[in-house]
Amino acid sequence: MGDEFAAVLAAAQNGSEEAFSALWRDANPALLRYLRVIAPAVAEDVAAETWVHVIRGLTAFRGDEAGWRAWLFTTARRRVIDEARRSARRPAVPLEEVTPADAPAAPDAADAALENLETQAAIALVGELPRLQAEVILLRVVAGLDTVTVARLLNRSPGAVRVAAHRGLRQLAEILSARRRNAMTGS
Amino acid sequence: MPDFPSRADGAVPPPGDSALDELLTAGQTPQDTAAGLQPVAAVLAALRAGPADAELAGQARALAEFRAAVRVSHRADRGRARRPVPFLAQLGSKLAIITAATAVAVTGTVTAAYVGVLPGPLQRAAHDVFAAPPAHGRPAPDAFRARRLHTRPAAARPLPVGSAGPFLPTVTGPPRLQHGQAGSARKHDRHKRHGHHQGHRSHRAADHGGMPGDQNGDGSADRSADHAVAREPGNQNNNRPALRRGDNPKAHHKGSRLQSPLPKAAAFPTPPAGPDRPGAGGR
Image (cartoon, rainbow over all chains, first blue to last red; front, side, top):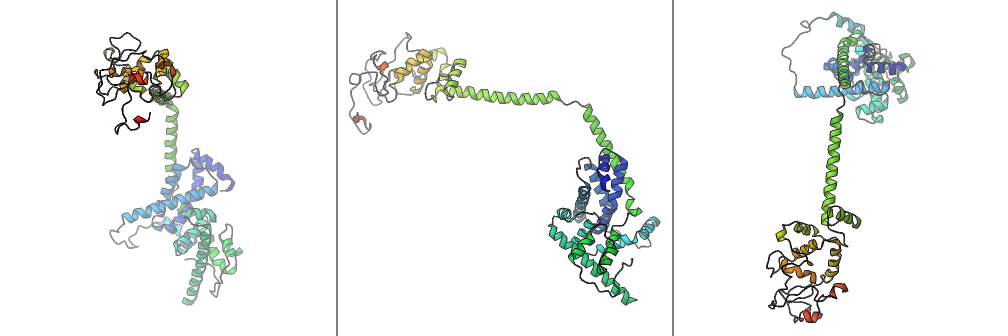
């Protein structure tokens, strides 16, 4: 959002719906991509809950765009932890097996998946990494946070965050290379 | 699954740390990166891609939440603006605090004044203002008790020394000088000047009220304390004539703490030293 951020934030804090929509459109895709990796089953619900919390505290927020993003993703991460605790207390048991043929058809969702296939594939690929490495890469790349902010958010040292990011990227490269080799061998 | 670009031979050279750091910085395109990291750069570029429609589907819900929050906030602001600050309530609580603090301070000061532990000037001021015990040297720890006796009914109150009362104090035992009481004559004069000798006397009487021979039970038999005389409990010679004030007028002016108002030889013979009177023969 850049230089406009301060004005947009101030307008949103004064109740402007347009300003809030601009903030939401800018941050929600990244938030969803992050949540689809660390909480794939409840990503949409956690995202909605995160925005409820953010809206409640919006007027009290003070900071720049990096601070805003850090606050948003910190709130989301806490909601994921809460959700994990809640589901651990009350584990959900499926009532019956639902086959893909029985699942309700959603043409819009199918179109969106095709449209954004590369992003979905990339999220799935990052999701194969260990949790810390995947989270660090997403917070650095998707949320746009620097190493120090990510370290604070994850309660790690900046060095540990940097090492985790490097390991994740190396492992990502190895996974891609192995798939390429398998594809060549299979063909 | 999309086919991210990769090296044809599948070999991945180990990337350096600086190259990995560059990958994580925004704006890095796969073409800018080293050949071995191009597939990874393509994945990261896909992660940074623009929003899909599905990712913006929840905007209406978020806006509804925002609208509700703004409405609640405005309503709260309006309510806060309409409702005046409860000034009287704030003033009342402040007044209560100030009143309580003042009451504690005044009560403490008055109590200290009656006990006699205030510093000299303050004690004198208290004495002038509300008849607290006067300030004289070391404050008497039992001045408060004397004050209580002072407020007893008139019938039970001892008479002042100078008044022509129905009787004068009677010495019921052989008078003997007690250490620390000889200077009472000087104190007595000073108290008389203050006009509070009665309370002082009653305080003395209270101090000696429990002694044997106290016929009235209120310490009246020991009013002779002003004359610095006392009796010896074991002595049977209780028929001595009453000592009257002024028997030894010089004693009132000598001021020595160990000086008896009565001539030692004439008042009582020195008892023989015994095991029950340690050091008595040393005088």
